[in-house]
Image (cartoon, rainbow, N blue to C red):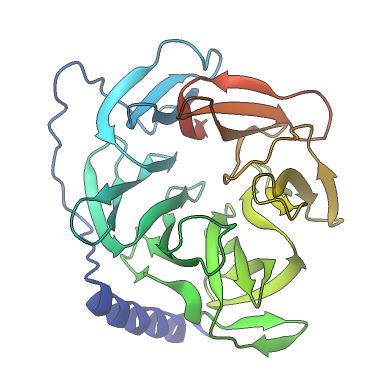
Length: 325
């Protein structure tokens, strides 16, 4: 599909979905949020920091060299957060009789420059390494991946053009070289390559989960592998961290792995707890993720990406970690 045709398809599809869901996007909202008392001014474009969602829900920042040190707490609260190259994505729950989510695009000063309003419960957020592409996932039925009958909406927004796909379920999908069509297809957990075109995501259909590789320019995707969820592309673009279903026990269904994209070899990581998170990369050698803590909340942990070592707690009382380099 050529570029002009792809843009037409995406714009038309987005327009219909926007009308159906009430989603809106403003490319230049340029509204400065009131930082409130004791709120630090955070800079999404400054390298050398680990950003995360603190236990209070507010976005926080600490030095990569000392991630567990006292953080700088910003004013903005998010249920899920991610950032890259001066662009942030903040998923927040919207109060009301029907659960809703706002996906807010942030500039490097944490100011709102765009917003998509969605039905459902916040679940995943990602930004491409360049800061151009933003993706999100919300649960619209069920609230966990190990529940029967869960349903997700996953969208992609191009911040340079404003093109928005609120739900990517209609992307042409190919499996075993043939076009795959099924009414139960769900996508979640997008992760972007550095070229802003190639992306990976989870897909489920007929009780099975798959890794898919997408081509944004051609607007199509293909199945690469079965039993792979919540992929996260390494900074060098050569590996995917992911969770794999290893047990029928609903309390401990997953384990973290890393997939080498050149050889398609899987490596089990030393973390043996069941991780229900889209892992992130602290650096090319280390994966980080959130685990529930006793008594509520979560901690961010890290583990070597080559299967060696042991897990270590990186930041107490935190989730949604992202290394801003």
